[in-house]
Length: 162
Image 1 (tube, rainbow, N blue to C red):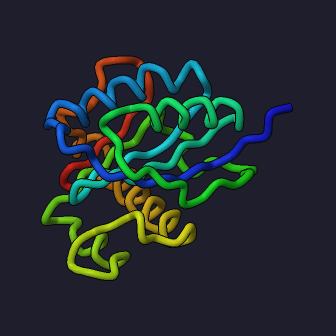
Image 2: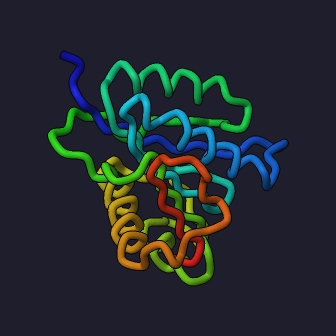
């Protein structure tokens, strides 16, 4: 049996990254993840992505190989890769949080400088910030859903004003 794992990675956006790219990534993730049994959370802040993916090891490995070939990601680094018994993001095909003025202090609490740089996070810090952002997103509920929400039937969570 393929063990369930949680992988957390960070990447820097490419120079040709455009505003529509985040929405494309979210819509593709939400459409494709549910049938594969994958769940997770995506954070976009200061030109970086921080993402957790949960599911069968073989599916996560295949997906991460695709992410590495995606020209929208640069300097991708795995921060954590571990077997898990329970999902942290099981209620979302792909949760999403965008850094805003309202949640900026949370991002900076995990930063060594005045700018969020997830490539510098330890595995534990990466899991902690994702967990805190997910909890906050669950608390504020659907009223915070952004225009990035997918029209598909896949569970989704978005919080731009988290």
